[in-house]
Amino acid sequence: MTRTRLGKTLITGAVAATAMLATSPAQAVIPDGTQFYVGKPNHGAVAQIAALTAAGRKTEAAQIRSIIKTPTAIWVESGSPKEAEQQVRQITLQATDKGTVPVLVLYNIPFRDCAQYSAGGATTMAEYNAWIDGIVRGIGNRKAVIAVEPDGLGIIPFYVSLDEQTKTDPQTEWCRPADADPATAANERFAMLNHAVDGLTALPNTSVYLDGTHNGWLNVGDVSQRLVRAGVDKADGFFLNASNYNYTSNLVSYGTWVSSCIEWATDLGGSFAGCPNQYWNGGPSTGWNGTALDPYGVWTEGNATLSLNTQGLNERYAGMLNGATLEEHFIIDTSRNGQGPWAPTTADFVMPTPSPTPGDLENWCNPPHRGIGLLPTTQTGNDLVDAYVWIKVPGESDGSCRRGYGDLLGGVDPAWGIVDPGAGQWFDAQALELAALANPPLTTTK
Image (cartoon, rainbow, N blue to C red; front, top):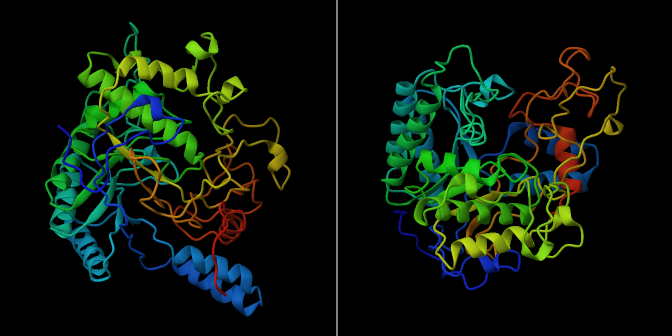
């Protein structure tokens, strides 16, 4: 049974792209009109504003200033249980004093990011659970919106994905850390996430969301199964697009299908494997012609381009659900998706690259030519979408991206022509571009 949700009326049609799927989802837990907390700015942003002002570049300085005055999530990523407890207590107290609600991102699970650019995290399940318990104590009865472990369900050590589960010789996914036990690592991940959900949802004023990845990653059935195993029925829903760039409207469709799949597979006798997904969109209106939805374009119902047409998928879910209530809500990270995802080509690179071209150009890692998206708000126009939030701080680096070239370029990112700042450090050039290409444009005061 999902938690009691307060604040929003039941859906009466939402938006055209998803109206046929449900008529009465559970109410949202983040009340309309919630004001999110603005924390301390990144020191690099403050320094950039000073440098731009001194150089007479007042418009650009105002744009960066607008970023740091916008509510963004605060990442809790390390420390002892006591240190984590003190950190979130201080944040929630400050937010309460200002009449606002903080968005907290918990990012400390063992084998975090599977030893990639944001590697780290606790070293054992016991250590992680104790860290979560410290955070629970620190929040207490104060309000907080909590995104639990970005990539925590997208990248699971030694996990057997839904597509592999029916094979006679199933293979685990690519994340296979040397220090993890192949026999227990995946189950331990789910156990730790359930522990986090249990502790955080026991608090009276938290809104807790699990990692739902995004529309360009896991298929609907796969992520739905992972969410259920992680305890989404006890949480308030899931979050999408954390630190990524996908179009908001596409994410609304994807999130609605995930919520629909969970309902179909858990309450209506269906199966996760039977859930229609974004990698084949055929349906009655398309004459059962289908293809994978293109994440680099905006999806709509009835789109003349088949790879952008969601109508077939919506029709299939409407028939499967037959008016059933959708329980699982979601929030969307809109911090950097104003221009949608980057379709990388080496033509975008600002410096020569070796040949041949590598297979992974890392379109998720500090892509160029992107822009800030919608401002944080609970006014989403869709009652399944509890809020748009900025989970990632625009201007903070995704890591020292190398586009698959490793050390061949001396660590230089060929898309920028420099060695990118480390994960979480301020990236001046990217911050300026994100601000300049914001969609909708940023409102600034010089």
